[in-house]
Each structure stands twice: as structure tokens, then as C-alpha cells.
Image (cartoon, rainbow, N blue to C red; front, side, top):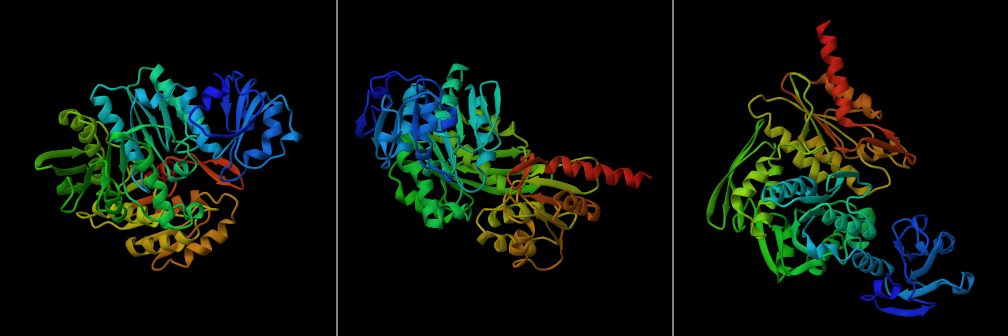
Length: 494
């Protein structure tokens, strides 16, 4: 495809060289540039693509799209240079065009919010498939493209990969796609030039402030999905139990469907019973009462079920198929996931890594102890090189709601684990222990658990690594929990 064709929807401020040349690939990373490729020199979180123009050209780029002042004379003159206002927006548009605008031919559902995106995405995928629509998935745990499972380095991939995966889904016979759309990806234009049929807002609580700066900026990033990327006849599905959800509803003039537990929601959960075997509740959907039975546990999954149910209604799907899809999901990897090895206590692994998510997790665990009066033992840490302000807040929540708190390492990244732990300790109180070694911390929790206690292992969920000083070491909370539980059981048999 010609450079000119790829940039047909992009305002070109200045061009040097032949923009009618045909390119066979597009790239954001200079290392991914192929012969006859088009390179987009865009700024990211950690670096600036303008620094790698020479590298891209040396690898075969015949065109460079850029958005800041550069010394073109330094570079090979046979390369075409195109200046634009925003290289990331140009990349997203070009990616969509290069892959033949795949979102126009898929029922495309986007999910954003601080918590609940992943579970909601699996529920939504199951609903669409129960409705007879083969469905792809883009999300935190993995990407599902037809029959292919691809590991997910980002919740939402960069736009060339995003559009490529959508096009591959079509090739594999998919009729729909469910995508988690993170706030980072919205600001970095990863999902730009994608047309969404329905967008779900789960909630907004403190997270990623190291990137966004403040909650208002965080909210405005989420707003992009509903203001800029939704189709004209698309539907916004909004949690109005959340204060930001209420704001979002007021800001939108397009089709909306609200959900929640409180009066005033279009789709409302009532008569809720949350137990060890799952959830039982009714949904009042615009006056119609519908019975829900789910193998998912904990009150916070009521919201996830409500969001997916509401999106199904907004898309005009048959309620029987919606219910069938919901019933087919009884667990999601690393999300309130039980580790069962025959022990006499409950062990759960969860991705909770914010104060609000920890609150939901522990309250969910507490709901399982109503009959047994078991203790809550919570193992948690905080990620390095991320928002330090939430560390004290996370500790305060764990201290307030748990019977025993165990502070450990999460992914320290390039920070000193002891420094992170010291930040956490400024908010800790009550009965707590400190064990920096995460494996030993899980062992401590498992071995102090008594009959009917609840051991909650929070922070990493589905992750199978621990990142320390730029290196990812193999580490899986679920496998560690299994190991120590089995070791305890074997010890008791002796």
C-alpha cells in the first residue's frame, strides 16, 4: 500500500521525498522495521522514537512519520519524511487502514475501568459465543485470536498489533471481539481508529497515578473511549454506583444503559446471596425480574455479571443466551481463584493491587466466613516504580479488614524491596508480619491457617513471574500456594 494511502486520514504538515512509494509493513519499534517498511517515530512512556530514526532506516524503512523537529539532513535523503501533528494518532489510523479497518466487520466491545475488566471480558466473550458468535479476546491475561493463545505483554497492545489481531480474528471466522482498554492505551492511542459497538465502564479508583498524575486526568483518559471511539449508534454501559460512573453518564448524549446495586440503575441486582458455592441473586432489568445463578464467588462479581449482562442487553442479544453465557463462566485465572488441595481452609489468589481492589477482595473473602467465622489472613505487597501514594492506603485497608496481615514483595522492579515495605509499614497496624521473600510469606500464611480460615494471596493473580531489577523470574502464586499446602498436608500425615 502507498504511504499516501496509509496516511489518507492524517493531516500531513510537511513531506519530503516520494510518498507514493509502496510499503509492505508498518512499525512503531525500529527493531521491528522490515524492508520497505514505514516507521512511526512516536513518543512513548519510556523513550522517544525520534531517537531511533537512523536505526529504522538502516533496517529498511523507506518512510518516516514524525511529529517534532528533527534534522532531516542527517538522514538518508531517499527516505520519505512526513511530519504530522501526532505520530501516535497517525500510526493508529494507518494501522487500521493497513489491515482494512477490521473493527467495521466485527462486533467490537471495549471494557475500561480500574477493577473488573478481566472477569467482565471473559463473561462477555462467553455471552457472545453462547449467542453463536465466535469471539476473539484482547486482555490482561492473554490474547485469544481464533484458536491461537498469545501471551499479553500489555493489557491493550500497540495499534499495529491491535489491528493485526482484529484482522486475524476475521480470518479465523470471528464475528466479535472483546477488548480490555486500559487508560494507558487510550492516552497512547493504541485503540484509536477502532470503532466500538459497546463500551463498558466498571469503576474508577486510585491507580496508575504515577502515569496520570491525578484522578481527574485518569478519568479523562477513560472518557476517550466513550467520547471518541464508540460508534454513533453504539451503547455505553455504565456502573452508576461509582461516582465517576455518575459523571460519565451525565457527560454522554449517546445511547446509555446503567447498572448497579442501588436504586436508579436500569439493570439492578437484588436479593443477593454470596456463598462458598457461588452467587445467587435476581436482576431487575427495566422492570423484568431475571434469576441469576453463578459459580463465581464474592459480591464484587455481582458487578462484573451485571456489566456483562447489561452489555448483552444493549447489544440486543437474547436473554436466554446471555444467561447461558454467564453460567458457563465459573472461574477466571488469578481472579478470586481458589487453590484447592484438600486442605481444611480456603486459599484464594487474586490480582488485587489497589486499596479499593483489596477492600473488595477481603470483603469477598469475609462473605465466605459468615457461617464458619474463620479468620482472614492476607498476603500482599506493592509494585515497585509505581504510584507510591497508594502503598500506605493499601496497608490501611488490609489492616482494617484482615485478622492477620503479611507484608511481602510484589514486583519490586528496580526499587529496593525493603524500601517498598517500609512505605507499606507507614499504614500498617494490628496483627502483622513482614516476610520479604514472597514464597516464604505464602508458606507463613499457609502454615498459620487454621480450620475454616481464609488465606488471601493478593497482587499478582495470573502472573507467572516476579520482576526484580529488570529480570522476570518464574513465580506463580497459585503454584506456590499449592506447593506449601501439599507440604503442610504431607507433614500432618507423618
